[in-house]
Image 1 (cartoon, rainbow, N blue to C red):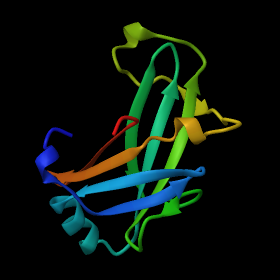
Image 2: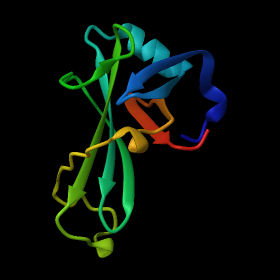
Image 3: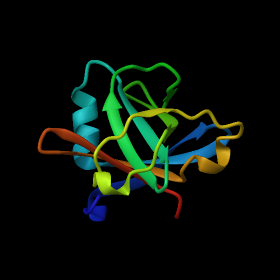
Length: 129
């Protein structure tokens, strides 16, 4: 997300996901949009293992395996992998399948940032502070 100034860091929201602390960062626009929702939003952090790693955040309402942040937001981590590597695909979605990790803790990110721009949810996550 380009607008780091919009991210509200206090009070920090934290959850424990796979025995690791995850900081949740919401912009003011995201907080307002969440407050208007009737059902909780689920943010799914997808980490794709292939010839390269890819990080994406998907948004939806299916709450299975998600950890509640509050009554309006839940989060889950989903490692996936592809059966083949294709850098030439140029970002096209290759068929991916769940990739269960024996110990997902090292792969859970340190933070998740969520924004609401032009009527769409936008998210990113990372491992650095």
